[in-house]
Image (tube, rainbow, N blue to C red; front, top):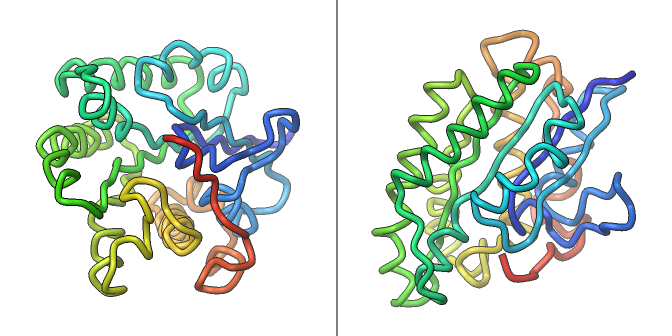
Length: 232
């Protein structure tokens, strides 16, 4: 049986994948990263649009542990902030961190796979979205603490994509609504993800990625088509 790499999260990971095809990777960074992975791996995308950390907890057994992955990549958090602002649903950062930590403890107990944690991110495209930072930034710091506590690789996506937005001159070129990456934004995530895993100090982790391989396709992400734009 081949080793499994599993991408988990919300719509940014989901990226409009076809739920009727369990092997479909969607149109985002997971699909862009897959060609750079080593031969012989099973690659799964189990991101679900709209998920908060509580939703991820509810399906953790069936959508993560049951696959017994050798490497798990998780991106979650922006919806916990978004739902506070559009629906008045609070998710205190300390409680959120504890729930996230519980998932990772269960994952380690189930088989101790290699782990990549991706920071949630926001590229404000409206003045109102700048107010979201007060709720999101503590979650970003929580993910950094969790990565250190669990020996995970950390993809510092918030800084990466905001710098890319500055370079591009318009955050909408990286994430049109401030949350969902464009094809270029997904490509940047995929390239950074592959580079992070390839350069891991642990040779067993680095072996998941082809040596020297960037994400497949042109730098503008056009080969992958438009990413999923469903509500996060």
